[in-house]
Length: 298
Picture 1 (spheres, rainbow, N blue to C red):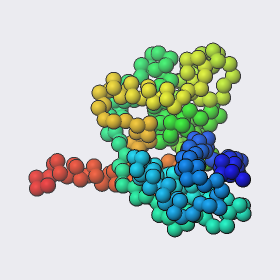
Picture 2 (cartoon, rainbow, N blue to C red):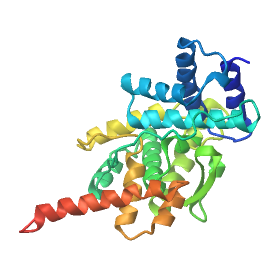
Picture 3 (tube, rainbow, N blue to C red):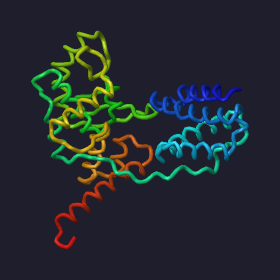
Picture 4 (cartoon, rainbow, N blue to C red):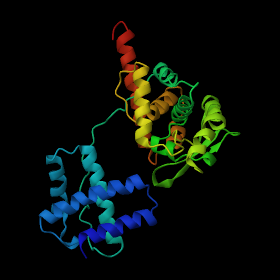
């Protein structure tokens, strides 16, 4: 069987059996396509011909083509899963990725906003306008819950429990988690639901999603990212932003105020607490800067 066919079976497996998110599956598909192209150039057409040397050569080639250690690590992770799948189902006797170390990823501290910057950003939407009210509700939810932008656009009207004050989000691997959203976000979401959303929904027909565009259709990640950058510009925030900026700010501000790491891990939906621990490094770095700036002997 051609390697491409094995890849197709693997991708079907992670969708049907593992229930992985579409974005993750597409990422696996791109990474494995790179591997297939590499093996094709070496005239390798059978997975049984792939050994440790071929996998290491593949990773080295990615480095020579300018791929970062993070990207190479992610690609190797997809390749590992692929070959483990083949071994598990009996299509291959030995895993060629065994004993191959992942590229070392340098520590990267995420960019965050100060509380005053968040306040300024969230004050930018004009809530006298329908679009501004919707944007205000969205930004408040992002900062109040720390959910990803992709999770925000997947929220449905029944994902929201206004009486208790929580949302149900589906993260990576379609894993469900419950996150409180607080009074401020709840106030603006209620206003959006009672005034703006009915008008938007009337233009596009029945739609289960919570946040809609002016045509009554589901919002896109790119659309939310563009409005976030526009409001940051209006607020005079010169920092480089990412779609995760409010998520990073949410986690850092919680930890700075004494929230325990496990609770933050649960709200963010991190599988491994080591992923959440990056935010303790952020707070430590900020404390160092404050000390250096204000202490007379720093």
